[in-house]
Image (cartoon, rainbow, N blue to C red; front, side):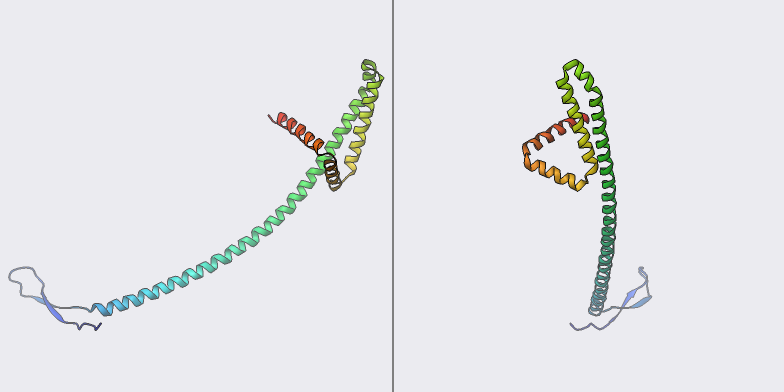
Length: 179
């Protein structure tokens, strides 16, 4: 398209019947302005794309830093959690051992009363149970968790039905305990 030439025109300044004053007006070309506007728009669009790309790169960098930091914190927390869990498990194992020892003591102390009321045969059963509980408490205290876990696996492999039954009984007691 060819650019239009600017042509002067006149217009009346006052809107009355006797207006004599006129002003010369100049029309501008639309083709020149359109191409200049398109050029400026495209430049602004390119600048916006570059800015968006830079922001994207910055966001990726920040996300990577945050991921690395989160991973490091997660590893720290994992180590702390394992340490705390180990401490709590050791404490629980020790308390369970103490409870078995206490129960053994109570049964052993009551064995003479069982002898008198039910007979010597039942008193001997109580003494044997007391000795067995005492031995199990000692073994529990002496073994590490790895050894206890391996013993548990072995017992479950030998008699899975008993393991399922024991788990059901323990589950029942916990359900009753927390109602």
